[in-house]
Image (cartoon, rainbow, N blue to C red; front, side, top):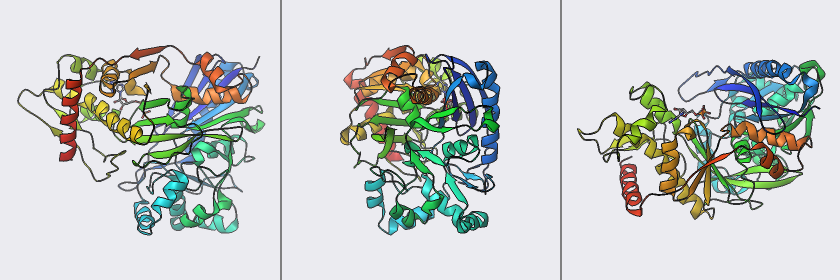
Length: 490
Ligand code: ADP
């Protein structure tokens, strides 16, 4: 029986392929690092050709493990969101390097749009803020600055797409130019209530709508691989941006259910059901799912610095040799001795949105050493998450429990501290690769292995570990007071 699911997980620093059995067991995986190009301060680019070649290489490495392409029931793709690829529909080749989500080069254009008084209307339509993070202004930059992109637009052969769109185009040998609704909702070019890209928004940003892909569901018969590529016509049956995919992989399928991913940065999403979110606290509104044409939405908050703070302790300060040592150090003392870190090393994200902020460490004394700094770094994760929880609650989306994942979620001390500071139960799945699992679930439902995501989750998700809050109110208040004072210093 062909009941394997092949997931292509195209991240920022690497591309992976993962082969799942229909019950969610991971059979094998393959991974390739991606070259990061930094042509100027604040610019980040990827070579779209390299993304494709490495994705294909990983896929081809896994197909024999399934016993051949014919044994794969469907493919699920999940990707770094907002990154833009421009290619020529005639040659199928990229016209320039992809502009990555982290890239800040369109800050002046965003400021211009804000000065023009467009932010409120754009936020109401798209759920997003006028920030260089999102795809639309990156497309405009390419049109204005790369002659090949402008020429292709004039000739009617230009194709724009986010990374999943590019991969589908290549997997289908140019037959499908599609994007899923979760990725489309990160472009600034689609209203949250719209079926597809919007003429008015495209006009505002100066992007020709004819270059954009068709917006499709996230599960179902979305496309089919060309035989020349993978040696079989395999259904592409699941598509989702990475954070939406992780939310699905964490089975946050009902309104109010919330996940937080702690990797380099931290991303929190709360399922909002069919209600279109409109934050008054500078959170984002985004499409969580589109299934059979029906949308579910989420509120999203992003913190720029999470695991990267631990990396900094390791690589720049030499306080630990490996990230997991922070746990032992934090446990070796009863408290941080008053040391507080605000990890604004690359600015502050939600709910502050201060790109110009920089980090501070407060409360240092001669008693402060490695353990205090390590503990303060881990404490900062709960402090930052607390601010998000506050903003989500103010937007009418309080958290009942918090489901965590990402590399840093493996730290038991941090997981317990989150439960303590947020005063909610924190749950962690034993299978931490929730991003890939979400895409596998979408594809499994898409090819009919399960009737719906809830049944797929029941079968494919592993065991959970729970962390229950046990901190006294006094300690929590003292921690928050310290944090707020340090934030003021920033
Ligand atoms: P990404 O997907 O963003 O590349 P990962 O989810 O792989 O990130 O998480 C890696 C990050 O988590 C690194 O920044 C690392 O410093 C941090 N990290 C990993 N394990 C631990 C741990 N046990 N304690 C604290 N931080 C950790």
